[in-house]
Amino acid sequence: MTDFAKTRALFHIPDGVVYMDGNSLGPLPVAATERVAKMLRDEWGDQLIRGWNSAGWYVQPRKVGDRVGKLIGAPEGTVVMGDTLSIKVFQALASALDLNPSRRVVLSDSGNFPSDLYMAQGLLGSLDRGYTLKVVEPEAVEAEIDETVAVLMLTEVDYRTGRLHDMQALTKKAHAAGALTIWDLAHSAGALPVDVTAANADFAVGCTYKYLNGGPGAPAFIYVAPRYAETARPALSGWMGHAAPFAFDLDYRPGHGIERMRCGTPPVIALTALDAALDAWDGVSMADVRKASIDLADLFIREVERRCPMLALASPRAGTSRGSQVSFRHEQGYAIMQALIGRGVIGDFRAPDAIRFGFTPLYLGEAEVLRAAAILDDIMANRLWDRPDYLSKAAVT
Ligand SMILES: Cc1ncc(COP(=O)(O)O)c(C=O)c1O
View 1 (tube, rainbow, N blue to C red):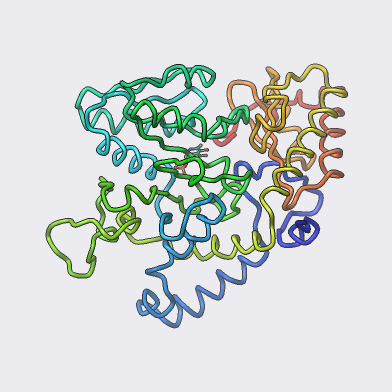
View 2: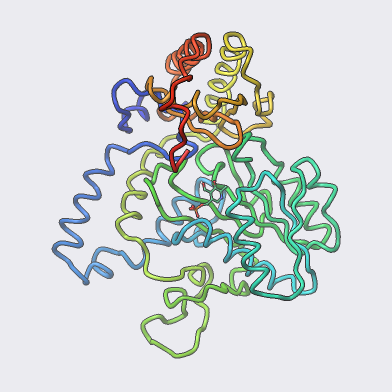
């Protein structure tokens, strides 16, 4: 059994805060502060450029990748860290299209994160080979998989509603139709059990600043199924993914296996913070996390529906059909969330009208969920959101 009291102590949550936004940015793991300070002092400070070898900076993207891989069912040597998730989406899609050269359709859904769709639009426009990006409703994806589809590109958990796709079933159907799959696990890794091997995914990508608590701007990951390890063309063919970066050849030759998905110089400081954050998963069972997160989310839904009938549930009601987040709709959603944040309950808002709450049992418990629901009730019952400073939108919502 996972000891959630123990994991709670690993995170810095400011006094008085109920943190329900781990689905956007995980909180600071206490150990990361000293780990990064030590890295700055002992490695950057004292070892200087020698740190690439002596402190292992060069191999860090693979080593940390293997740690992330354990959380998503990826074998060693199939995950590498680096860049942002948007970049990794681009890279995975370019590689997947290359592996399926006779097809011209990329199938995705309207629940995909916009940046994934934007990156696809940018890539397909640059390739200029007559590709179409077909974006359908999440419920329609399965029926739209046919022999025209080159790549099925989906985010497993819908960022707005938490709706969960069946990764295994959709991958199976895509493969039967001759398509490859790319799964964005941004809202899955660290949130629920993921098994890219069992699902037979071809590519998977994700970020590490949400449920993996790597900090703002923490590097992304990319997984390539072992069957494509030596044939996937990385497209973003940077020198760190070259077979021999320090030979400084004038022509690109892809590195061995997942190494080829590296691009440029890795963000060593950010990887160090992430490496420290990943220690929180030692002794944690993802099945326990899933069960606790569903219980917390169910409790919150029950309490909010009982207390605040004016808020409409925007997430699937069945816990097993959701990721680790719950959204409610209200036309004043933005102001309501600002009022909540003013009272120490931190979630976020997604346009046009959704207030979103993440349920992360590593540091969130039942008492906090009940407190959040009671504060939301007070805000709704007394229109405490109706203040000019809550109604005016900031740049980041
Ligand atoms: C599902 C999903 N995909 C892609 C992105 C974009 O990630 P990045 O800003 O790291 O490129 C996000 C960001 O939150 C996301 O939630």
